[in-house]
Image 1 (tube, rainbow, N blue to C red):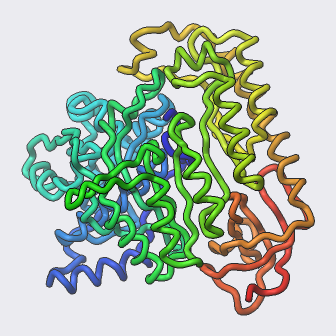
Image 2 (image 1 turned 90 degrees about the vertical axis):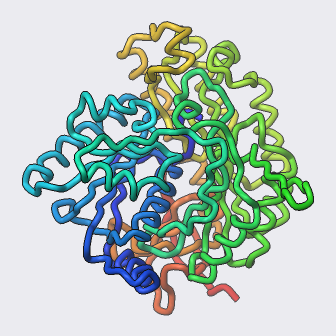
Length: 482
């Protein structure tokens, strides 16, 4: 997928020492070691999967005595978990590496590591050309981090970008980095077998492999017991999840996993991301309809509304087929919100084909979308087979038209919610006003509302919508949930 999981971040997510300190202290007590000996700082860029991976990294490092810090200038190890989806994402990483280098100069002995997709794509080039990096670790090599840190500490090149056909990190309990303690990600599979011509993910994350179903359920149950009230099941293509129990050869599908996690407790909300249109099944939609706590929201990337362009992208569906899938979702889940990804200016795209993307947006009535200009990525099928021939100014203009239309559709979508009352999971304080709560409804829409006594993050509230923007519902709490 071009945006393999929605929530592409342009600003880093950093560990919060208030929450991490407690967790690392617990781990230190178990292991009989001090977490004050060495500290690490980590920034995460890109998709939700990267953020989830950073939690695995934090857990691995905690086991060998590293504590977390939010101050890079006191860190012994500075890590950046990277994204290669677009050139801009890699440029951001390079800028951050130059900043980290200044910290190293002030504090000799500090090591800098690049993790994730950019590490996998560039490999030793980061060590040889950038001269700013001490260790390079691909998405399947995080277990090797302690050894790589020791190697780098001795002045040697520390690289592991081996792509595994088995690694799922199923046995590692991620160190939760979300300071709210309300929502969490659970990685249920890794890699991608879809060879979309524009996408670097199959080359940076390897082939698909699904995680043991029972470890997924156990992780979700543990999170609920710790007070979390929402989990998002993650994968580059969650709908292709398929795990066979080696004890009895019983096969577990994604729809089955959804039901198993939803059965943990009615108060545990379940989301998932991302779906490939070709793989989402009626059974998944039936599961959403059967369970109140499986959210009525599906991220269904279209990328382009034109069949010829879709074929060039190797998306394996036509415009008409995708439209039928959207109709089926609305048929089985009438109040479902659908979001999408769109790329403007893919190779050879014409004005008429661009207008097809605009028209499919109007047809699908997306609640929101992630929208990008095409960015040619080295090593992809598109880079090898097609010419990136749409001028930059044309890409930008088409993107602005897509953004403008989506903003209009989102506003109309939200206006239909005025006067409605939604069950909202309180996630924390509003960024704009600490007197307001923020939370999301089942359709993944952000809801802002004044605080009332007796409510706190992790509680559910009934909120009646009184006004909206294109991005937010604004309302007031009504009668408490029984």
